[in-house]
Image 1 (cartoon, one colour):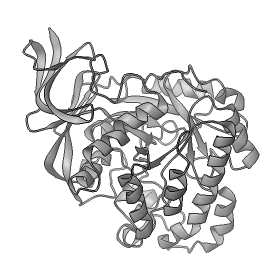
Image 2 (image 1 turned 135 degrees about the horizontal axis):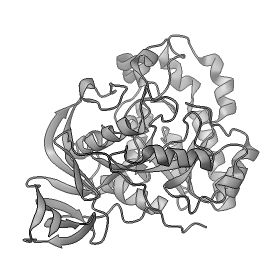
Image 3 (image 1 turned 90 degrees about the vertical axis):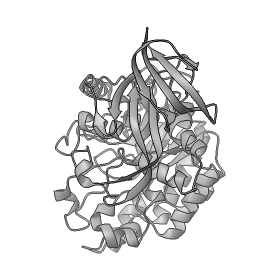
Image 4 (image 1 turned 180 degrees about the horizontal axis):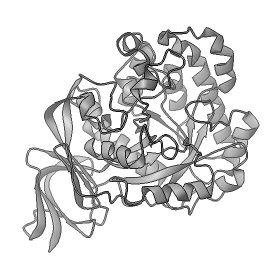
Length: 439
């Protein structure tokens, strides 16, 4: 007997929506087609779209260290309510995940506590090159995270010689927070106390572009893979589009939805993040990049902080906003608005993460692949409300926004974990597996 059949849905298979049933057995996709076998459970997806399990390649779940703000358990609940089946989680915790002992501790913390599947970044430091050179076989490791400019936490590799060392010794994709620390320090004098509108003045276009140029030059010099995170400037979109191949990049949903000065007028320090939300000319160019398939992934950069901290006077307010729960509703609304196609979105949150990072058996609805699915209703309108946010921070920059298109079920390893906003069962997420092909 089959474990589960998803019936009557339109399934995203080989770049097309097809009327098909999907049979699941032992956590795998067993058969695709018209299925009349018996199953322990049937999910009726009539009028709904069955997507491969969506992956958020940038989240900060704050454990260990700041578990009052978020932890692996609460962050994973926010993920599955938002239709996210797998997350990559960041190492700027306290202590940082920058050696194998701390990495193993994080895997131990995740076991039977995370609803979604997961992988963790290994944090680069100025002196852990030996560790970075042999991560190929490290279970649950998606890549190396490099902070070229300071943000939340104390992981920072600012010196060019040290950045070279990280790339030279890297045995995985190096995902980069790309801001130039020297320029950040020089620009500090431009910060106006109490005025968050000066955030993009301090963390300027030049600050981002200078760092990104350096990262690309170093990655190309050593023929290593770099993935530039949360790109915010029109200059970087144009530059990175000329350097494809080993260089890939991400844009966040918030940079495709909010822009200055309106976002700061409306949200104040709640709109503060690194790199910052910028003016509409950058927003428009980011969309140009999305439409022309320049960028490779959409990651939420889920970076929650408690309201009591976000409401401190700028610049004492921390940077970052939650996003793992709203990534799919925000982007599905953009699909409904005709700003990108469903195919493009699936490339960005399913297929490209699998290709760039070498994830095994995910990202596609294919027989033999893992049974991870995000089932969406493209016509369902939802209103984002702070009280419905699963993150411990209990707020969203999109509070009060109405979005058309919403996840209605999340299936992970063949088990329904979310249905119509309700979390089901217990946390049984597993570490992602990776192919060991890396030059």
